[in-house]
Length: 261
Image (tube, rainbow, N blue to C red; front, side):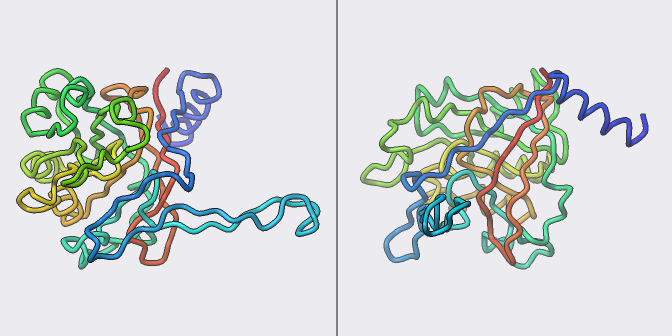
């Protein structure tokens, strides 16, 4: 099949309904939670929107807003430059990452039952090997998404599941991340939680291993996604281009999945 016919088949499938588009993006609101660091560190700003005009004396024929937010607010992309382990890599910021990396297949590991039973669930290499026994090897260049159905598990007024000792939400351990990076060569890791790492991963060795190993290997992160329950274990394609911020460490974005109907 020639390249034009491949693209034609794609657009025909989308128009004809044999390929569905699933939005994996949470709506940005001022209430959407952001990661909180210990008080001695700088903090991320929450999303804020200020109306400039809305068909009125400030602008009679147009509506628009100013907005401010951190690069890591809402559904967002993590670039390698975000972490110290990736700070010296080439093409490590959102404006220099090769654009073809923003479209990739995805493998979805469903651990929603485990997370419903244990909000501190840790994803391990063993879970991934069990998944591969059923669905096949995780291909190089694919995303690995951890489906937890987090929004259905956690209290809606405490999305980060903050307790006295910090956040409690699922994530991978170091062995899991190293397996994905070193033995499967994935393009990145995605989660429905506020961060790609486990809520208590500051206490892991190394701390925050998903950030450390993924970004140190030039891989990416996606977090705060929704609707992962609408994706099959394999077969979907993710479209996730971040904003082209100069030397940006990350960016809010619209994450879309193309799924065979």
